Image 1 (cartoon, rainbow, N blue to C red):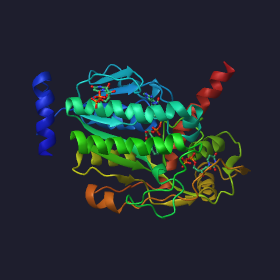
Image 2: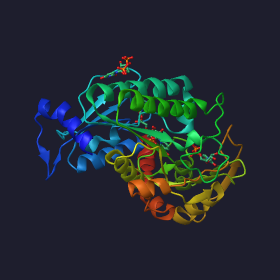
Image 3: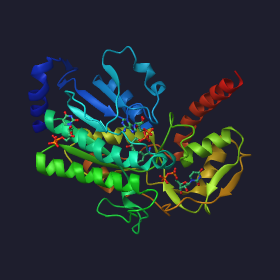
Length: 343
Ligand code: NAD
Ligand code: UDP
Ligand code: UDP
């Protein structure tokens, strides 16, 4: 940690004259790109709670001011409407780079924009990290493993990705972002951290983002059938958002570049997920089969031994424990939406 502290003190301490938070730690100034989105807004809550200054950069493509509105008026919080594809000048200690649509429905909506966000956006944030000596964390994805031929997936697996498919703008975009991060690390001495995040759910997910957990929960609440794509035997591993946020912070604060898988190894088929949603929300909920989308990975489950050993991190919240936290948030928002329609 010494190297990092010396560097940030050198670049910022004297310029800003900011005072220490608590005992032994200086208050940090931290950028969270995509901080008005689902994961980003939970991360912002944690960083603000522990006493740091947070600057959110977001273009509101999928993010919402509502996700961070509770910080408005806090002098340690700042929200900038900005597209990371354009350069930006800031003085900061750490950069959590999350800006990028994450749901297949959103990232396929404008694939060229998705790849620009991943490549040019990541380049700009790495250029910023290099200029000010900030530590940089990339939120990459389990999608870098594509339709994996190894199960569960370890960080050493290079993946099985279609370079020309409908998901490529996201998968290959994130793979390029990882490449850029490693090249800035090796070539320009930027302190980088790479997280490969597996499917994450929780409050504040977009109601209409098309991901499976948000779809099933919203459908069960609205008394609509849960839409199972394909035969429903494909698997995913679902992580509750607070576990992810703890993992991201442990990674940023730790000494290891990664990549690290951050996910919950509990593996569920889509049919099993529908059963759990039924148990938690409404025992009379039904399912309906729909054709699957192109290039859908058949299975996905993280091997998290590396994060356990080197970051001392592992998820704590099971799917059955996590889902109810999401349900009340979804119920409120669906109710407000319905009232809005009637008004
Ligand atoms: P999200 O869509 O809720 O959040 C993404 C945020 O980035 C939004 O606020 C959006 O407005 C913003 N954004 C998008 N393009 C931008 C641009 N060009 N400039 C500025 N802001 C931009 O998604 P999320 O689930 O919170 O995902 C956050 C990050 O985590 C993403 O990088 C995603 O790839 C990664 N990730 C998420 C999951 C998951 O299951 N949630 C899994 C793997 C990886
Ligand atoms: N960049 C930025 N903010 C900064 C520094 C750089 O947005 O504070 C952008 C810069 O405009 C460039 C990218 O980051 O597009 C990469 O910067 P770098 O200095 O590494 O490369 P160069 O500018 O030499 O291409
Ligand atoms: N899926 C589904 N019903 C839905 C939405 C998605 O069965 O309403 C399936 C989808 O085909 C995939 C899995 O759920 O196999 C996870 O999809 P999601 O879009 O949540 O995330 P991905 O892991 O594919 O990025």
